[in-house]
Length: 303
Image (cartoon, rainbow, N blue to C red; front, side, top):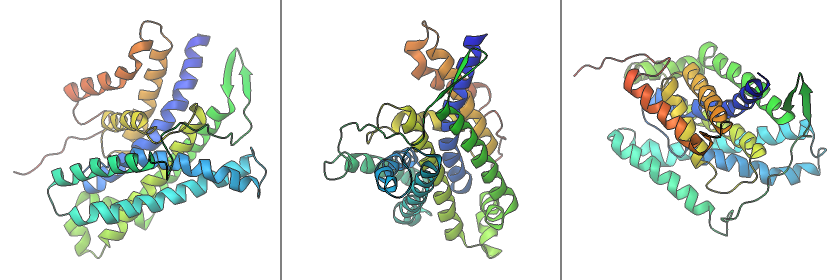
């Protein structure tokens, strides 16, 4: 039982990170009906933003403190929100009326461009860099279980951001506009909704969540490098599809589910070598038996 609870706690922390990334995928899909494959690279840029911000803010705020960590996360999220809106403006907006295949290929191209450019020595370089400690790390012992302070922070911040995102989407004018565009873009435009502004806001919000996820992922990883977003990005995309692409609660549920199952598989000797395939096996099963995802709804299209 102790092993089960310990793996569950570790899986929830990892799944929370996947959930934050998956929310960005599903928001963009819900509004524009395409997958932003550069989203995982924005997560990587968030981690590097925090990497460079940490020593700068150490001169202003106390290093390895919760206040400085909060400031770093907020600034990294703001930087990546701007980057996400620039990507939308420069790469996706000119192709909005083009076939979805053209947009999909462009998204892959933007992802490869960011990864290749960041590996250049003039930017980040290909070498792995140790990520600085942002908060004091402690292991809390409770009933035979060991809970790291980083995991507690991930769970608290993720819960807060999920609640904040739900409030934005359900209770604000921007959220209502997002849902209107998702439901019927031409009708939303006729009602006076600024389509470009709402789509830019969606990209910025999703990129900010990816940046937060990137910081937390870097805190758990041994180091950061320009290709660090590929694997968590694939798992988060799988989580979004498993939960129901375009469905925000589904993306969060899928992220937690993938994280928990991956952690349990890593703790079982027979399955530890196959933990990377667990997420994609789940994806195949979901697509076979419930193509719309766990919380997704089947859409009927007129031909």
